Length: 366
Image (spheres, rainbow, N blue to C red):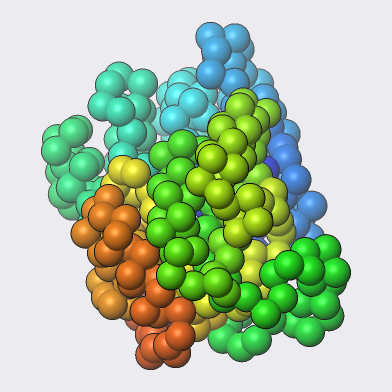
């Protein structure tokens, strides 16, 4: 089948990386993969995996973006995909209005994935318009049912699957580790506590710094590493974090690396990985990625992150916002090598096959 995935851009973040991984798996299985976005640094990786990228400015939250409806409709007529899979609200509106303007006999099957628990309003409601909806966790499924009143049989829960070929157990690559220590010599010989994720306030980097302030009083070897880039609009937040680290006396105990494309190696190097979102997160890929390489994860017991950790590593759960308990758990796990299991439903293979099954039902219904 020919599948068109649509999202705002291909820079960083879980949705974008997941789109690229899924596109690669489609090609491996003999399907034709297209992705429509405004572009970004992951485009080269996408096309290297055998997919085709279609560039349109479908990312700007402005009325002018609806000028893309007619060009996108022409694109759909030219490409004639069997399935359109929308992954974000603004592109979903453009696709929905372009799709509605096609003759009914020429309309592809339409599928959406709720990657988040969006604010409930008319703008977000577009994600519930396709007949087939994918929720990335049980808590997202409950949100859809509570917010949009859709029939439960329209929703399929498919957790974000970890690519166990890329995220597999084992030590970091020796050459990579040598290069990292050349860049950050102060990391060598330390107990590393990793905080991955793009820099945005709700991801919990401030809480991580406060938790690290508790840890450094208990161990001279503990060192925090914040891996994640700041978009142009978030540079002020980065400055706040750096000032907070200085205020807490953590300038020499926490390292900011910025955006990195070698996150799997960081997971392998770390002794513990932290997930500290300040609100219920729909899923949280960093948990399953870190667990897949064998590194324990500590996270607050809420949202989709709690679902993943409850299934794969319940020892990592702590009460929401309890930084003292969080620090205690990090310290306890840093010297252990606990048994970790990634259940089949949290693997990429399951996600791909389950999504293809949704596509087949959507095509049959269309």
